[in-house]
Length: 298
Image (cartoon, rainbow, N blue to C red):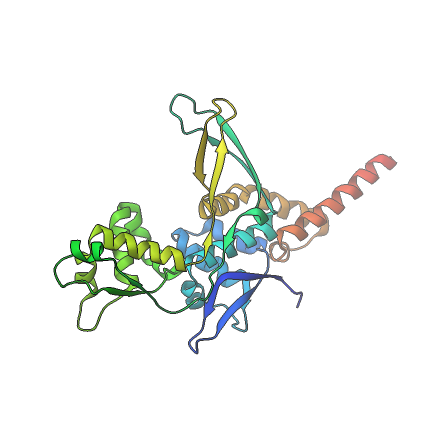
């Protein structure tokens, strides 16, 4: 079997024995997988899980990568793997346009960057749980005696993304509360819902900052300058929306590629869709050169 692209996860997969697996091996999307994902009706976090199970051959010595393993990955690892998959499937440069957010402007701003240049903050040591000591200010404002001084928590994962996706669409604040309820480990003889409800705004802020400090991170915010009004702004790069948007945009092109190769090579649709995009384009390039040479010889 041909070796895939190998990368190091920012966080890693911690198996049931406590072994941390950091090295991931990926293969590019085939045409069949592109078609399946474009036609899928599942929410985006579930589609990400589906992509990872199909295109990540292994994480360390863990193979195959099941849906359960993909869901256990921390959020930054899933983002990072999707970026690497985009790089090996569609290429390493991202190009597009955004509208300037200033109301009196709205001009088009060109976006052009390399995926390899996206900053990645790696986790020093991925653990199952972490703890944070709340400040006196956070405890003073909380409900009397309901909040312990030490809060234990785990990092958000793909499973959290899948389960909280519908809530996030309706209310970001409610989704954050439910995320805390899922990630905070309850103190002995306490109920986590009651604990989260009792947290003061300061306590929630300290817990959220502690989570961010310990989690790996993929920097997806872009600092841009509008060429028309000259003002700067920060725009998030929606890696999930961009990735699946590209797949939907290229669906018609995929079918044209299948038709072209089937017409000239007489391959079946299944054989062509089993090829990754890079190989399909390579064969199309060879055909184009051959056809041009034949036309020139006439």
